[in-house]
Length: 144
Image (tube, rainbow, N blue to C red; front, side, top):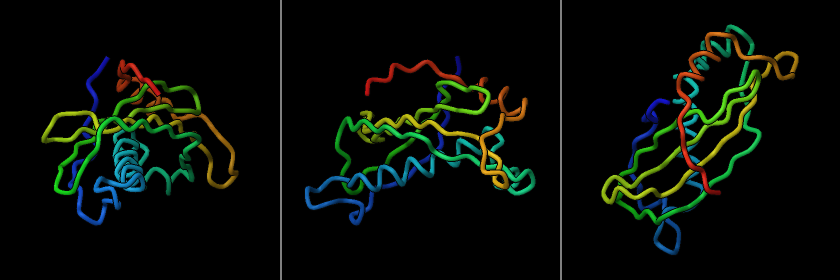
């Protein structure tokens, strides 16, 4: 098993917070989305691959567990890893931590499908991407 990879670092701005004074859920999703694209690129699923091969990935399911509040001025880091990589499906995890406290703020488990953008049908990942993805498998006790 490998370590989770850093896929996002950022700050919580005041406009990310809701009337209760903590980061609103829309911004968790936004930061996790940025981490998802960074992680996909680490697997070889980047814009160049998508355009040249007429391939894409699409989210099938996202589950977020909120663990602790994050307030304006906090810095956060998201680390990501593969939980499972099948022929056409990848399931990965993002863990967002508050850099000041070290606490886990939220966890997202995302399942995505690899598909042909012309045919609009799922298709197998290339062998090199499967190998790279499987090399990034992590052991993580997910409690959703």
